[in-house]
Every structure is written in structure tokens, then in C-alpha cells.
Image 1 (cartoon, rainbow, N blue to C red):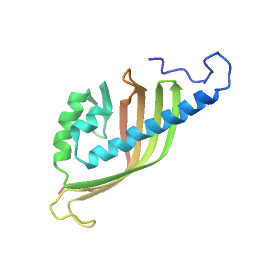
Image 2 (cartoon, rainbow, N blue to C red):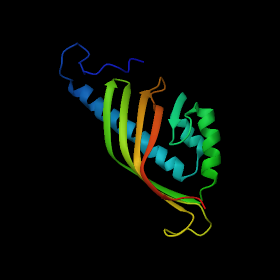
Image 3 (spheres, one colour):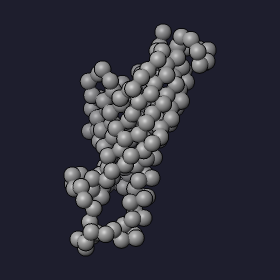
Image 4 (cartoon, helix red, strand yellow):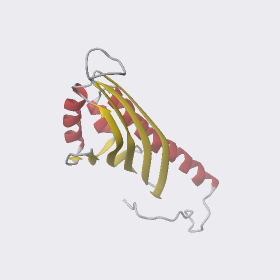
Length: 165
């Protein structure tokens, strides 16, 4: 994929995007943001296969303090174990910054807030809860089936409090 072209050109080579191209860009931006929203929703649903499906076949997931998870199968396997420990979680994503590096390639950064409950009694205070604040940074491509998927996702935390006890 030609994911490194920085400047936007019309299909005829001129500098201004046509109305149709601008509408397509808006639709693409919405679809790209929806991938990150879906990632948060799949984690909250504890659906490891749903998480993995958001990545390209050889996609990579980088979490702090661990080696990258490479490939859908590996992401599904590891997330199956991780998400199995959760009793409940709520992730919120916002402040999306989307840059199209080519018509079918995008770079995205957004803010994440998450609450995760690990014990049987779900509450916001005390042991068994984790609060996380940070960012998701992702690279996405539109695949041949027309769906946007992540080639990479890096999770970085600005801060965390609590954890599985």
C-alpha cells in the first residue's frame, strides 16, 4: 500500500480536492474513528475475537511492558486470557486526530480513559479496580473488502491506579 504520500492531490493531479473526494474523506475519517471506538467496545464486551478482527492479518498490538503481539491469531489468544480476568470494564475514547497519509492509509491518535473491575463486587473504590488514562496510536489501512483495519496499535498510559489484586 502507498501509505507514505503526504500531500493530497485530486485524481487529475491538481491541488484542490473535489467535493466527492472531500465527502469520501469525511466518510473515511468517520470509519477510521469507528475502528478505535469498536476496539474499546470489544474490550468492554470481553470479545477477544472481535478485538482481533479489527487488525489486519499481520497487525501488531503494542502494550506497555510487553513484546508486540503480532497477527490476529496471537492477539485473539492473548486477549482471550487478559479479558477473561475482567468482570467488567468501560473504555472511553475521544480527541481523535486523524491524518490520511494516502487515500487508503491513516494515522490516528486518541485519548483513552478506562475503568476495569476484576473482583466479584463491582465498585469504583478499593481493591480489584484499575483506572487508566492514556492514548491509543494506530495505523490503519483500507483492505480490499473495503473495511478499515489496524496495521498497528500502540497503547501508552499517562497514568494508572489500582489493578487486579
